[in-house]
Length: 285
Ligand SMILES: [Zn+2]
Image (cartoon, rainbow, N blue to C red; front, side):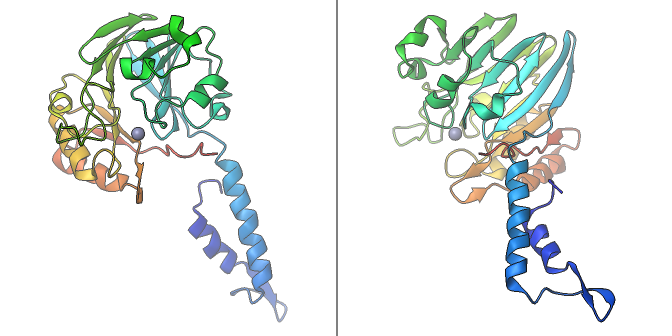
């Protein structure tokens, strides 16, 4: 039932069996009030279910499995070799209650859906290192300075046995009108054992993405007018050919992007790319 959409619930409420002339028949409720109550109860059930995170995935590496846990929008958690890596934690600490506390927190940019100070403050960051671009470091509370490592475009660092490279993320054209100017935020490439994971950050289909090599798992943004259209995301993915791609950060000004269309476009061009559509908004408060 938790998987059922609100539309399906309303259809169901409209066709619940009612007794008529001693027989059980399916017919529309005449009683509007009853219908409202039932829809309300179903809606409550949906909202309750939304407190749950979507099921995590497992990616096999030469040094143990990576658990990929989508959290919300661009927020995800990777667990590997006993280490927990939080990316762009967002939308309150509640969603993280059942997850291991972070060893590493990667932040891509200064916008509130990526650098969410309230959520960061509510998490247990005692043993965490924050890995951020300079523009984010400039905005973090002073008491986190000691646990912050600054990484800018083109640089690589090693933290908790994980190699992390920062790569550009920006809008096109790359000029002063850009919502995301080149050099401010970071996309990240993480090496976990023999697997390379790419996290796009908020970006368009820039040459630095199109020319990535040997990416096993990619997390690709797709929302307008902030990042990419379905066509842009698919076209970039077809260029750098990750083995697995997750569409994430797919809600924009006009609602959700068409993730099914993205999958269709990618697989039309290359049927061997494993396009994974998960519910990145299941944990919404
Ligand atoms: Zn964003």
